[in-house]
Length: 262
Ligand code: ADP
Image (cartoon, rainbow, N blue to C red):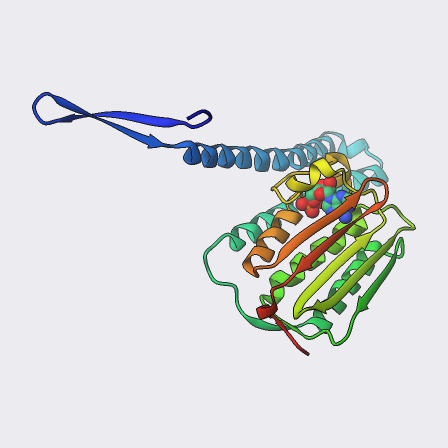
């Protein structure tokens, strides 16, 4: 078959007969390529901040006696910024690997009023007055059955992306409602938007539309991969609607069995 890889093995059989064994290793090869790409990506993401930190430390060591204090401090701050970036990357990698284990998702009763308020406060803090941020809750917020920590991280990631990809002065809307017994959370921004061609790949690890912008705003490229895993573990779906230059909407739908009335 075209596009498939077969492994052939000849095994002696009886006195003078041979057995030809074939094995389809297409999927195995694909997994191996993905693993290799992932390791290469992680190494690359680590290497950039490490190179910067190393460079600043070396400069400080060589030039310290003559370096004005202000300048030395600015080098130290830049090295610190890079170490924060590495820390964030390692944190996201650990979160992802924890999400990939087979341990079942706890079924805690997550108070949505509380969760939405936390996401709102965090979103406002990240925006620090640069955007108009609002939360609309239709009816009683109710309760979700799931993992409080993971849900907070998933909904928070969507909201923080809206902040990071919306220019100053923009508007961010968080919405929660229950439709036909299913919880629905959405984040709408009027930011830079996303070209349709990128949308199917956004939840891949390290996939970014604009690497520079993602890095500038402190992105690790793993946020939506984490969102995808958390949602899968809650049997929830993610819908992405976006138009370049106009904005985006990310909508999460939870199944009815996880959505409890307040
Ligand atoms: P990153 O750390 O790069 O933000 P994510 O996995 O959270 O990583 O997102 C992947 C990519 O999806 C981003 O690099 C960005 O290009 C795009 N993206 C995510 N959210 C938005 C949004 N609200 N508006 C525009 N682009 C977005």
